[in-house]
Amino acid sequence: MHIEPGIVNGVKIALSYATAAGAMGFAAKKTMEDLAASGIASFAARSAIATVGVFTFFEVLPHFPVGVSEVHFILGSTLFLLLGAAPAAFGLAMGLLIQGVFFAPIDLPQYFINLTTLLVPLFAMKELAKRIIAPNTAYVDLKYSQALALSTAYQAGVVGWVAFWAFYGQGIGAETMASVFTFGAAYMTVILIEPLADLAVLAAAKSLRGLERSGLVTPRLYAAA
Image 1 (cartoon, helix red, strand yellow):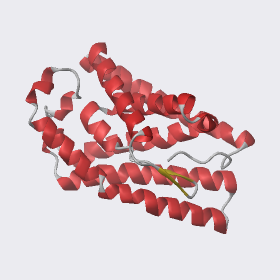
Image 2 (cartoon, rainbow, N blue to C red; image 1 turned 135 degrees about the vertical axis):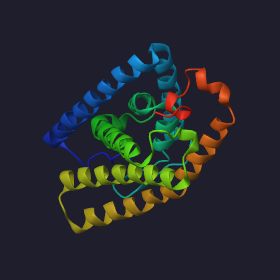
Image 3 (cartoon, one colour; image 1 turned 90 degrees about the vertical axis):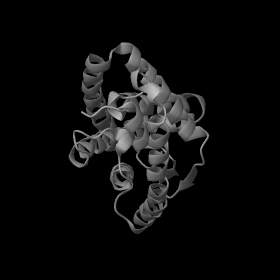
Image 4 (cartoon, rainbow, N blue to C red; image 1 turned 180 degrees about the vertical axis):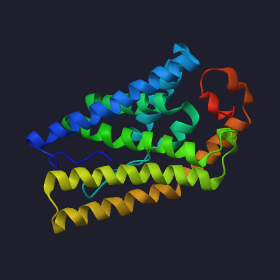
């Protein structure tokens, strides 16, 4: 989902500062709620796990350029279900920054574009989870249809934001439309894998009940809201 350099140039990049500020403001609010509920030690541990996970997703798992961006296995719904929204947001922000600083400096001017693209769908997915997961249901007990809905929402959000940035930066032309469509079609294939990854990770977590009080996972993983 890294928007290709040159897609958004000049003063147009300024919009990403505003969108990222809004996303980070919401992330800060969720962080304060998480800290109040779980404490700083648990939040810090889950954020560190998320950061390592995101960096691994970006640099170790297969990724390839398609159209206006790159296709990555971000596993955003997996991070959310295991660690919670706020630690997942921290991990996405830090993993993206570490990758840019040490491995892909060419992506740094687009950092806030990419940050918006990752965080806004994450928080939208969190709101969707409230609607489709009953309050008395722990995440380890999710059905495939629920995991699929969360993954689809996140990936569709990422594709939607990439499309927005592409059209915003380059205009609505035939070439841009073709590149966006190619990227979107390739990226949505992630949906074939991510729900299965979610269920596999949740099944593993269900068998590891010792994690319930470790502070290394979100309390909602095992306990109903």
